Image (cartoon, rainbow, N blue to C red; front, side, top):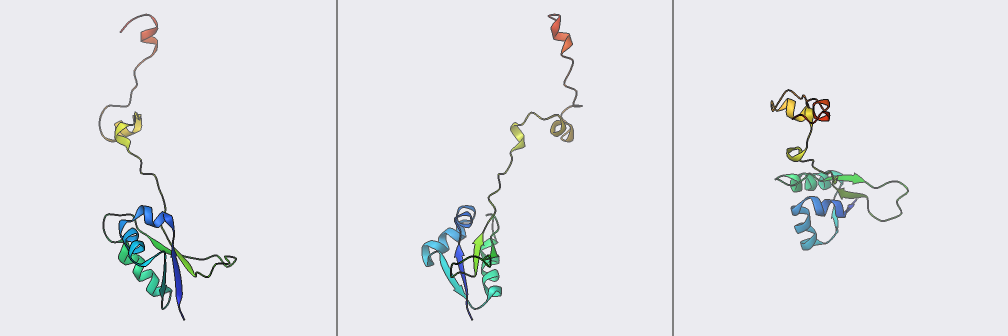
Length: 109
């Protein structure tokens, strides 16, 4: 019995090792079973890139593949540029008090 895996674009974009594997071996890879496919995915997930994993094909999927190598494309938030009272408070930047706006209404500083 074999287990056919297709590499999805999300995995290629998120993980350089996956991109190299696709260049070398193509977008489909055959394994003896799902366990071997998952071991391959685990091996590709080591390092600084985002992890990849095997997602079983949906039963209604009419393709010949048994599973897909995928990665979640998540947006990493950079809070360093954010103007956020809670973030400043947690980092000890200030007490979170934005000040009084009515002090400026009279032309004061």
